[in-house]
Amino acid sequence: MIPLTLSVASSSLIFVIFKLFRRFNIDTFQAIVFNYATAFTIGMTLYGNQWSNEYLNQTDWMFAALGAGILFICLFFLMGKSSQLNGVASTSVAVKMSMAASLLAMIIIFGKPLGILNGSGIVLAMLGVFLVSYSKSDKVNSSWMLIVLFLGSGMLDFLLYVVQENLLQGLPDSIFTAIGLGTAGVFGLMILSTQWISGKRKFQWRNVLGGFVLGIPNYFSIYLLLVSYKSTGWSDVTVLSITNVSVVVTSALLGFLAFREQASVRKIVGLISAIFAIALLYLSNRS
Image (cartoon, rainbow, N blue to C red):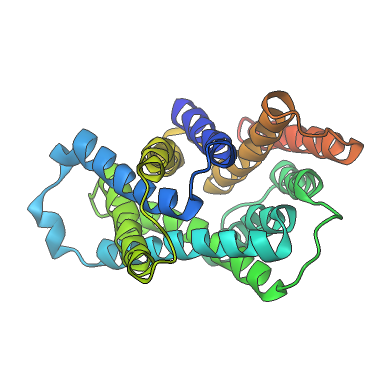
């Protein structure tokens, strides 16, 4: 339970940090790139002693790390563009509801069991996430972006599960997480360098600082999620469901309490639904 709780806390902290970026006028994309460099450094500093050169003889995890790195940076970049064109709420719904795609893939491809309690919890979770995230005020201008975000985010969740379950072959979760995030940083730095050279963006130290602050919870949100698959004793479907729904609930509560966001009836109903979903998913693994 502790790794899962800390993973949720780390993911929720990312929400707070992104909110603060606006207040301190930090370039989000630059901070995201520097965040990956920070996450890689943290992972290798804390867990680099777990590395063995024997892992270089295994190619499966390398391709998985490359794929994860590309998805990390592409999805972040697309989320930024979609937030501008389609609105933050619509983009948020697409990303958060991607849980449905990854859960469906886990159930169909790996034959994960789905009892009544588990199934009811997942349905309530979807309803809660939708009600908390949806907003009528957003006008969708580029629906293809939302579709790509939905499928891409679900693919990333599923990839991380497959890696943890089948591909690591002795490689520690900590090292894989660091390398995956580091790969994203390399791609991001290539994009950022061209923008600096062309004058589209200017280098500022506050963006580096923002990336450093973001990189710490970002690393642990992913690393601890991978650990949670092994440590909770719950089904993988339940771990992924509870993690995603808990992040939505925690982020919404932080928005209400810390940032004075409006608590509409719809959002409150969504939060109640999400909390019941967590309870059902938890009970399904104790019965």
